[in-house]
Amino acid sequence: MDIQKPRRFETTDRAHADLFNEAIDQLNVNDERIAKRAEEAEERAKTYTDAHANDHSIHITDKEREKWSAGQLYKITENNGKVFYRGSSETTDFNTLTETGMYLIYNEGINSPPSSNRIFLLVMSFGNTLVQAAYESYKGTQSYFRFRKSDSTTWTPWQTQETTSGAQAKVDAHEQNTNLHVNEDEREKWNNAQLYKITDNNGTRTKLPDGTDLLTMPTGFYYAMGHVVQNNPVENDSSWFNYDVIETGAGRKTIHAWRSYDNTLWHGTVHTDGQFREWKRVVTNADLNVAWQTPTLTNGWKQYGSHKVRFCKNMLGEVEIIGSITGGTIGFDIPAFTLPEGFRPIQMMHFVGVASSVGTGSTPQYHRTLIDTDGRVCIQSSSNTVNPNEFITFGFKFRAA
Image (tube, rainbow, N blue to C red; front, side, top):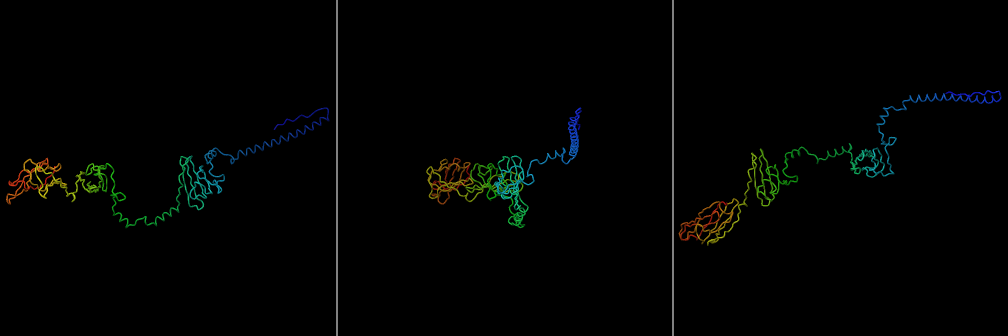
């Protein structure tokens, strides 16, 4: 440090010069001291600065700056590393703890898990969506979790996380419950049972969907209204039908169809070639019952006593005429009566029947009768020339058209 010293006074007045020069000398001494101290201070400053610059423990490098800048800058605990604390004097709403962090909730709170006192809580947030994991600390045996959905308002219910001891207890209870397990005898018995399901789970028939083709159904018991399925025994029949299907090898199957309201049964088969062999109706004793009808007699013919003329048609389509008449006109085209439609033959038919023997001794007599396709029943001739129309009897049967 350079100091410009003041000049001394030089004068002929020695007394005044000495007086001023004494002050100037003192100033020079002070300046020299200041300069020395300034040099010493500068030296100490340089020494400190050099020592500071060379002390790497108090400075960071670029790598350290980059590393620390990439570190956990968001605080998830208190500064001392302890979790954020919510004391017993508070009532903590768990729905408000939405910032990522670690907490200790030392009060019952609201919207809390079942074991809500002394809960360690971990919150992991990704904006609207977040998860809360809660750990009960009093007994240390239960933990829970729940989520807040992306709408930021809807929370899922608290779910209990399974523990090792809890899982083991369930396994032990399960193992001891013999009702839940089978033994070898039961397994063998059930494996020998009907394993192919042929009914609904409640044991009833399975309802067929509309449009089902009966010929394609596998073994089983089914039902449907006849007009909504394909290949029903009677087309467009809206009655309820029950169907039993039994398959065999090589694509063969047997199908039984019952019409429920009148207990009528059909059966059909699909043969090896895959062709349906048509429905066959099963005849029962009830089908043998017939409805007898009485014709209107014409051309003078009358019923003969209690042997009244009647006719019927059986389920095979056969028409039968029985009984006796008397007193009418005999002729080739003179009808005694006329059969209604549905009871007429496919073609003209002639029958020979018993006629009266009155007036001819004991010789049996006969008559020839025409039954035409228009239904006319004509007594064309009689072998009894004495009393030809005294007694004409019928006992004929033919196939209706």
